[in-house]
Amino acid sequence: EAFPSESVAKENAALLALKQTQGSLPLERKLPEPYRSTWLAMGAATAKKEPAKLPRKGSKNNLEEAAAAAPEKPSIVVPTMDRAHASRAEADRARRAKEAVRNQRTHAREARKRANP
Image 1: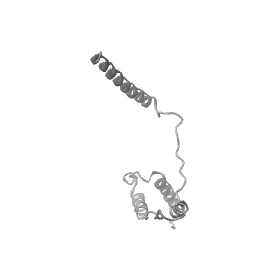
Image 2: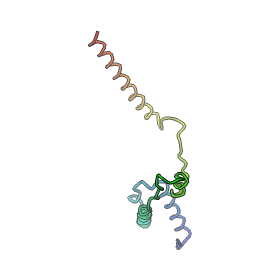
Image 3: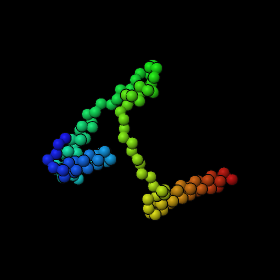
Image 4: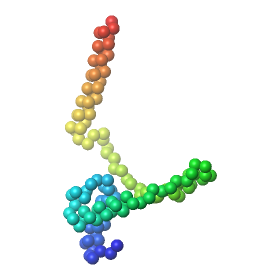
């Protein structure tokens, strides 16, 4: 698509990249009007795509036909964290929840022992 200037082209390219990475979020609520309509148009265009038809079960080369029929997806790199919790508060909440479950089990076990000597 041709754009009137290089800056408008760059902004639309950035909007397209945002759509590919955060497409499931309703960002049209935050975007100003020229970008809001573009965002909604991109969402309508992706919703109109038909799903790929997979081959029947009885065919000889099921895997090859399925691979040929399936659309290619861009490889997505999912960033991972080097630790289990994002913050100390989150770690404390998880630790307290784990302790609460352990305490419940201990109290239930002790109650059963007291009830059945």
